[in-house]
Image (cartoon, rainbow, N blue to C red; front, side, top):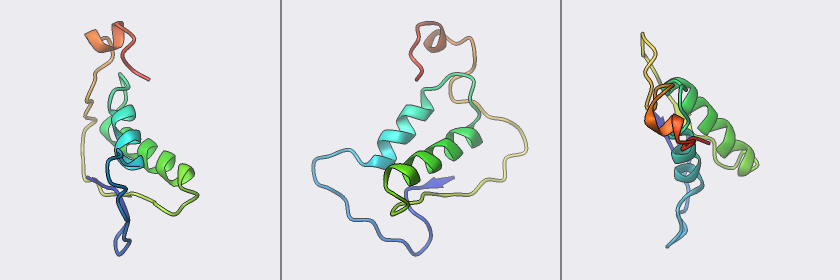
Length: 83
C-alpha cells in the first residue's frame, strides 16, 4: 500500500491540478520490469525530493513475492511506453 502522505500528515490539494503524488506514481507504474515495492519506493523518494520533504508518502507492504504492474517484455515495454 502507498498513501500520498505519512500518518498524521495533512496535505492541501490544489484544485484542477493533478497532485505531485499521482504524477509520480503514474510515471513509476508505467515502468516495465519494476516490482510493486520498487514502484512505491521510487514514488516516495521522488515526491519527497520534489516537495523538499514537505510531502513524504507512506509505504506499507507485506508482499512475499515480487509483483509487477508492467512485466519486462510486455507490449508497453517494447513500444517504449515506460519512463
